[in-house]
Length: 254
Image 1: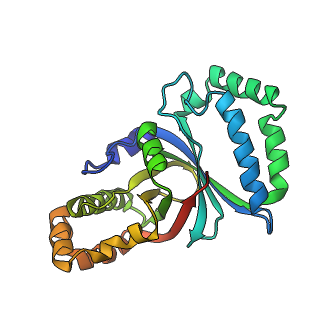
Image 2: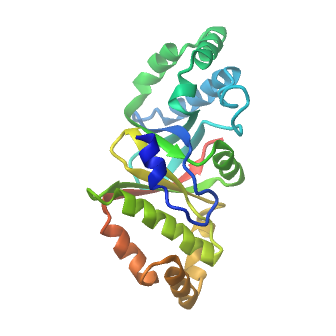
Image 3: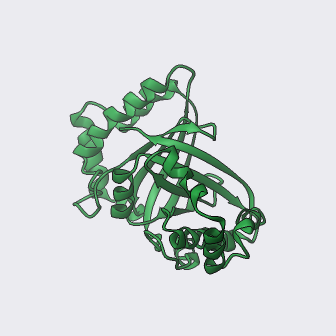
């Protein structure tokens, strides 16, 4: 399945064009009144992951950082989006990394089972999806530099998954022609219903909305250069490829 996902990735200009790194994407809706507690518990858990060398992804192979935590601002119904770097199933579940995580949990007197038992009463809903995405150093750099995010999650029309992925790359090409930030693309391997999601990185809401200040003629030329029929057709074309999608604006949790 991973080989198939890699084969479907279409080259396009942007911050990264290869999905070679495995992540676990976790969506959480906190129980009423429990969001502060959930954030505090995950921040505390970060120290255990760091002690297990999970921030360096085992032996320093990764680019540092993570898990990356976003807090819902407006849009979808979740409160937190957590992106956990794994590298690969083989690496994450290797005896060495399992042993490091267990030892770190023992040292902190907080095993994964203990953490989940403490967290459980504060969670109203959760969903997990394993995805292939850009290399960790690319993702880490984007999260380090920006703190405002646009999350778009898609379920493709049956038989249109590859074309939807191509559309996502075409839209990145459109942004590249305009000198605008491009999205990082993540494609589903297992778990939730989503076929893919994209993350856009911005300074703030004004930065996200700044594309509206670009003249229509420039947007039209960029759309044609990216392979669309015109700037006004980008959204219409996208909607022929997806069953549904969710948009969310989110902020960093530091």
